[in-house]
Length: 535
Image 1 (cartoon, one colour):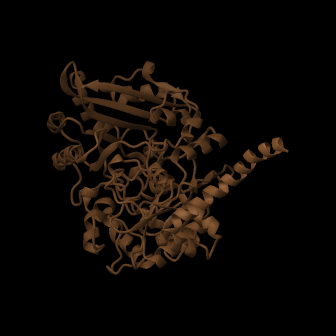
Image 2: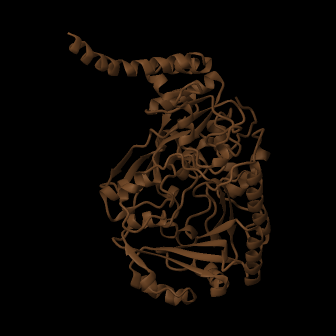
């Protein structure tokens, strides 16, 4: 009998542990009246147990780990950073509808987070009391090769999409970003681009349907929402209009073999002349070729200088690429020996800084809790920067010491799509986009001020060389210095709205006014309704 009792006790303990932890969770949350009110509101469409399993209050032991998991900028992971009162982690589309209606009923703002890569943390930080609607569980991906399409949940990552395409076809891909951990919801709603931009344009150019929860909690597809809203959420920042649940995207053909290369040059190795020539070749060469140029201040032989790195994807074999560049860009000196022929999925991994031959399953790694301190900015170049301008730029970069530049070539398909086809207007007439990039590891306000000021000074320096009236910027390279709003007036929104959307700002305001007139869905750079009324 004693032996039986001894055997049963550990078993009973194992059976009771989940119940104990569940009750502890309920009791710790019971002291939070806002949590209780939200669970009660959710309980109208689900059980209280189901509701409590997806809502995290600050009393919940998992609250901090859930919050931090998708913070991708360490500037917004400090003790003084405003925290959400609750985090909602929907596992079903109906949970999102409940979150939208219940947040309004209780009088709290919702911040919608897909992958957490918003450079200014606007998807998970706010000055008003707020909840985070964290979409990471809604990550399903269904590939339909007969239709050459895929439905992709807003909480899925680019890496997961690429992997699922590869599992179904070795000759299909999708034109989107190079960072595998970026969330689909934010990337596509802000336009999205990658290494096939010159061949296939933007990610949003291949969206054919969408599912979205509107301010009334209704789940709408393209037909139900109408073409105006469908237009707005493909590049206008969907978080101004509702909550995207999933996008349906058309896949694009890719060859069985593609070619990549990376080549570095310093100022003593003709880097200035190469940059000068790149500005005219990169946007006009064969559509199959995309090149990115990194420009970085470095120390070489104990002397401060500038290094350029040209990184390329060519949708073809290395012989064709070498022949093309020998004709268009002999200054770069590309030879077959530095080119790598590989599959498209391997090129995706290579662009994400993995070695060739890395297993595609690596793309499924979400790399949680990975965050540097960082600041990003953007610009568009419409006329080549002259040689003297480049030489002055090198001098300024060395003087500042830390900020790098990323030049992304345009042209090709980007020249053939009208500027008002989607909210993203930066099409024909733009040679390349600049990303200003600075990252650091030192915590503290002094480091933040130092490095963000460096980025600001370099962008100010570039004023004579970039677009004007308006000076354009890219929404997905979120930069609060472009402008922000406190009253959500048309005029305040116009400051950043015209930079991000140029002449498409007014149409976005009209759509916002029609679908969310009380301005429930808002952030510091959201589209305002024509009336400043908001709830």
